[in-house]
View (cartoon, rainbow, N blue to C red):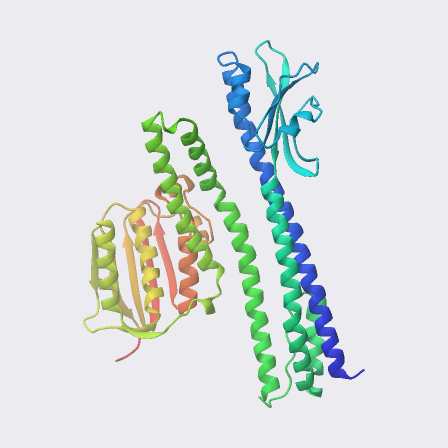
Amino acid sequence: MKLRNKINLYTAFLFAILLLIINITIYYSFNKLILDSELSTAHIEMEKISENIGKSLGTISEDTLLRSYVPINGMIQIVTKDNNDSSPYTSPGAHDLSKRKSVFYGSEVSKTIEYQDRLFSFESMPIIMQDGSIANLQITKSMETATNNLSTLRLVLIMVTLIALIPVLISSRILSNLITKPVTTMTGTMTEIRQSGAFKRLKLEGNSKDELFQMGQTFNHMIDLLEVNFDKQKQFVSNASHELKTPLTIIESYASLLKRRGLNEPKLFSESIEAIHSEAIRMKEMTEQLLMLARHHEQWNIEYNQLNISNLINQTVKAFKNAYHREIDFVEVNDTPLFIETDEKKLKQLLFIFLDNARKYSDETISVELGKDNDEVYIKIIDTGIGIHECDLPKVFDRFYRVDKARSRKQGGSGLGLALAKEIADAIGVRINLDSVLGAGTTVTILNKNIEK
């Protein structure tokens, strides 16, 4: 078999297998994630319902209680140890569930069950009845929405796999006719990458700088970007799942309160709306910061221009004053204008991050100083606030690290601001020095090379 035919065959086959493995992995990962999420949500709802029913037994009739907590597409019932069960209550589309045999459990049960070819979440929790006996509160809830979503995902993945194979077959045939003998080494390396799934680079030899050498350089650069982005995406998923859990729980809790008592208690209504609005804003800011941190620096569209740094700081300070009504003193040490080459938007964002930190953790006037030290321009942002302990200084640029977690949460911090500032500084090539004394204040120094005019 000719080399070009082998390349054509291997490329198509390996890509199809890889795509199939990826799609199967995606499907089963989402299948587990969605079903676990549904089960977790059902368990949380069960805890709340059992608590409410336990408090209301004796004051409200059992039938009324069960009827009020019937799930939208499911069944609720109380099962006793002697099988003297109460009548199950079902939603309009789930009457067949009442025919299912009930079982008494000695402990909490949370699982998925299949009944009449349909998937349900089943929750059973012990409760104390009015006469002191132990019974099970059991809720069976349809997972039809989740199974429908999984069916749609399965169909989409199959279609994507089939459609993706068409350009693969065409492109592999074209490439196999163009690739010559010097590409054999590259083909072996690429095949190894596909088989192992590891981020490997091509070993480039010679100084010809021809198209093949340039293709090798481009390939290596692409692998560098993929590896960095892969690591960043893993970190993004981990960070997002960790940090968004709290505001989502708060929003869910207040939303549940609104559904139950919001219309009858104006004070509770106002408190809930305020809390939901506050957490939504914080989630939006946090998500924007996480998404920016997840991108590689080359995706930030950085544009370098020569800037009069004094004008930029004046604009930034003025905008910050108007936004937060805080007193800021701007002092220029040099008499002559200072110029640097950097990205204006990113530097302004960097200044806003440090000014915002100074605003949050100090009540006195904030000072901004611009000067020149040897061949570097420095910008100092000085506050006389709470300061940072010396042992915490090396960690403040770590993601989600908060010197004072309770105070930071109260101020609306997510622990991402300084991590984002470090990423921006690295991307535009400036240095950051942080000096702080606990109880005396903090000084942030931004350093960049001066450009002589």
